[in-house]
Structure formats: structure tokens, C-alpha cells
Amino acid sequence: MTSAPSIDLSAIPDAQRAAVLALMETMAALTEITWRQEHLIAELNHALHGKRSEKLSEDERQLAFEDLSIALAEVEVRKDHLVARIGETTAARPAPKRTIGNLPTALPRIEEIIEPDSLICPCGCGVMHKIGEDRTERLDSVPAQLRVILTVRPKYACRTCTDGVTQAPAPSHLIMGGLPTEATLAHVLVSKYADHRVS
Image (tube, rainbow, N blue to C red; front, side, top):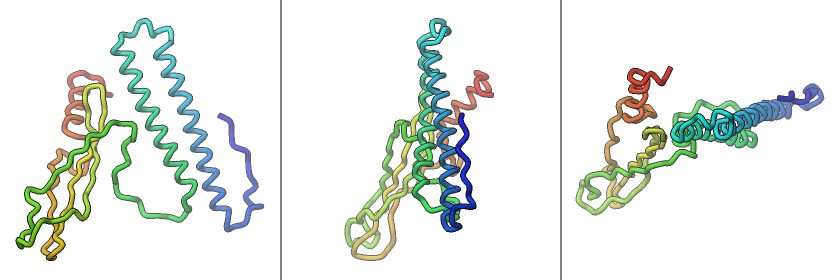
């Protein structure tokens, strides 16, 4: 990798120095990501067309391709986040809570909508109307495939009275607030302790 040209920061006004420093850091991070992408593409080409490619079975070749594709997608997501940061201010912000969008967008998603048992207002004045929803993402595992299960729980409220909001309860998870589903955890445990594939 080539090093970025040095800039005399003392010649830049104080008001703009922080923005220039942020741009320099972002440029260095993007350069590193570009190098990583080139490395992953070279690995992919080697896995598909290298000398060992004749010795790999079709399943092994497909697994290598999927692993490298996932790694490449993760690098692309990181690059998109850095590019989006260029336009943002450099003011300090509190650390955000985990929200949807943390998992790679290239992964397939299965959306589950969990409705309440009844949409009739408890006071009996009519049917409740949707006022919002909570969305959570968890990483699920299908053998040799990763996907995201998106759980949607719509919120309903009555337009006539103010007796409250109705929403279906969240499904229970093995790890509260955790990203992996039960299938993902089972896959990791079997791979580590039965198949000895995870270090």
C-alpha cells in the first residue's frame, strides 16, 4: 500500500483542521479496505482457478466461494459506512444502541411478523390501528448458508380512547439481546466440539 501524502496542518485554519483530519483518517481507512478487497478477490481467483482447484471437490469449491463472498460483503459494508461518515460532522456522539442494519445487507432476510392475539380495543370501542413497530435482527444459520431473521412486532392503539398500546410479546431467545438464533448456536457448538472445525 502506498502512504498518503503528508499535509501541513499548521497552514489550515483551526476551524477546518478537525474536518481535514477526519477526511485523512477516512481516506486511510478506505485505502486499507481497498487493499483488503483486492486481497479477497485474489484469494477467490486462486480458490477458483489456482493449481489446487482441480483437487477441490465441488462442495469444497462452493464453500470457499461462499466464505470469501461473505468476507467481501462485510468489507463492502464497512466501506459504505466510512463513505457515509465523510458527510457527517465530527462532533462527539453517544454510542448508538444495537439496531437493525448491523448485519451485512448481502445476506438473505426472512421477515416474520408477529401480530397480537386480538386487535379489539380493551374498552370495546373498536379496532385498534397500527401506530408503529419494533424491528430486531438475529443471525441465523442454515448449513453452509447464513441468513438474517427479521422479527416485526406491530404496535396498535385505539383512535377513540387512550387505554394503551397492544403489541405481541417478543419471542424468547436463548441469549437475551443476542444476534445468533438457536440454529446458529447449535451449529457453532457441533462444529467446535463434535466436528472440531472451529478453533
